[in-house]
Length: 410
Ligand SMILES: *Cc1c(COP(=O)(O)O)cnc(C)c1O
Image 1 (cartoon, helix red, strand yellow):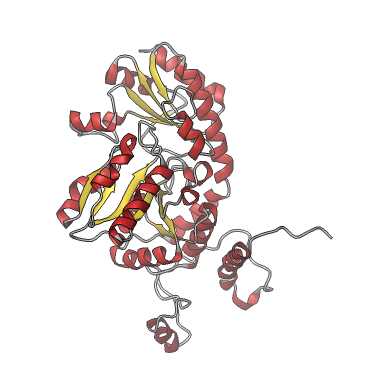
Image 2 (tube, helix red, strand yellow):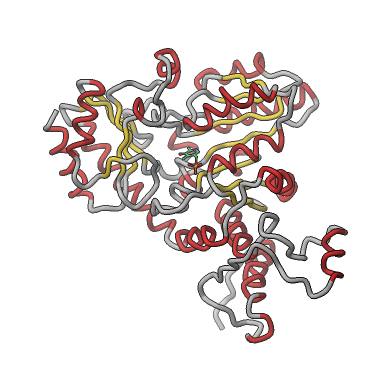
């Protein structure tokens, strides 16, 4: 007889739980080991009780009683289990968007009178949330430059509850040394005898290319709209962490209300089946495109963590298992030239967002970094001639030819 695969007992029991909720929909009609291959959609806002005893059990804290979809939904639950397994975390919470996941997770741990420390190069929505919303709620935000992480000990205080960062950053694809940042936070926790959570936005790298839990990070947030969804057709967000952390996040999610919709969860589950295939191809395409564009005379620089010319190439090799699908180029001739290129592309699509199977381009000064002051742009390392490319799964020859013809139009 062939040997059984050696799954850790924990993984096996989680997978068992996964199939359990799938079985529930068909109740007693199916053999205990039978069930649908695809994920059933529980398109319901509420759940019928067998009798009022169920309501009482729920009120007394029994988590197995389904009550209302803003609290829990079996389709959503199965996707959360799958993502938790993929990310190597204990549990996950699914949200209606990346921003819902990020804002809910942050507000679960940082309260009025407290503060968070962040690296400054962030997704535009997150940056504006920190700049415009948190201070109005009496939550302070301090910034640390990723190349000066040793300054952390001077920045941190007894009010610091959370350290937030993104790596690779948007759109300059600069890296934050995850292990070093985690070790600075650990030192500060000892000094102040308090818990300081570390939270990474892992959207750009994804769990295929970067495993933050292995490096000691507490919480992963991710816009599942991007690589996890992968088809530019859904909005979703996810928080992955320990059971204890996720339980706190889910409690605040009930009140902030950014919960996931069952149909979106189904579409996301479908996307996850091809996640690895897509992202591996995107890694390959991005590496090939970046090295071609780097040599192009109209391109001042091509930024990609997998290029030897990337200033943090060694760090990329240390903390990433793949270099991702995002490439940023800076063209000669500033914003005008960048516009010319984007408007001349035929295969790549001129659209915001990223992570889908089709290549998308955007100009940061007109998209993620629009309406930012000169000083803010400088802080973020963004220049007018930059084009951010989210590389898709197209044939690489079609893609490079498309960029070459568009660059000729400058
Ligand atoms: C898109 C994005 C977000 C926000 O996600 P939504 O799903 O659009 O709300 C957050 N972080 C990063 C890095 C992103 O690219």
